[in-house]
Length: 330
Image (cartoon, rainbow, N blue to C red; front, side):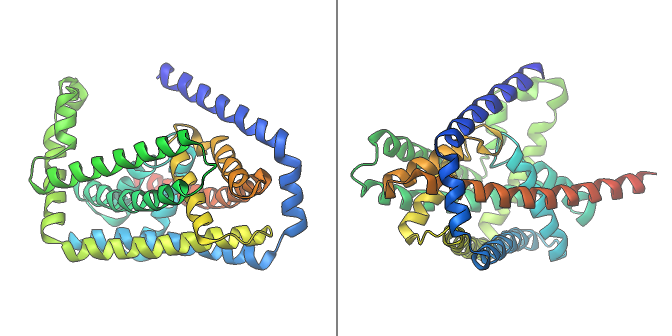
């Protein structure tokens, strides 16, 4: 526990230092970009696009849950999606931090057993990561076409994308063949030898059987969830388009995809909210694209403001959920 806290403190410190450096170098210019070009119509459209991204993320998860014969109201799942995102955003593991909360809320609010809930959330995450990998591949191709982009950046991105695709392919085929990936990994690491985790392999095997059923017998639901990810991706592009227009920059679709690729890469860095790394990545990208890193920093700062708003909404939902559970206990 002490080691985890120390690692967290170190990662936050590094993030703050990087954040402070870019604020010192480009902060005034970025604030001027925002102040001189702010357009509230585009900000409203940006906010609405963010809401629609959550809507399609919710439908993606709902299509998977429905395939298990479990019914949960859309608004309930919508709240859980925002709450899970809020937790993920502030944890070092930005891509997976809120999933346990979603499983727990599915159990308590939707009366969905933990194994089914866990399986559905993992399937939802699989679709999300697969879609992100495709976006990343497109971003890599576009990055290759930029002559002054550093080779090291192209190499790191290529390695990350290849690794992601390999993990997804191995996970898919092992699940379909009934061999499992999670249970095999836990057995290999001998986690089941730890007293508190003795029964974990059996539980994971049950979850993996549910995932095997989903892949083998619910192809329509799988394709439906992929369709909702495509809609999510489309509105994510619109989200960035409106955000950049709100600060006076009319970005092209390739530029937006590159900005999304940077966002995807930095979200894997084990620093809460990718603090500092998001600012560095976007500033560096727009320095390469347009010779003006302050646009990238302005983009990052506006993204932070939007994120804080939805984090507040997410934790309000969590607070309401917690109080409701406490009342039930009493």
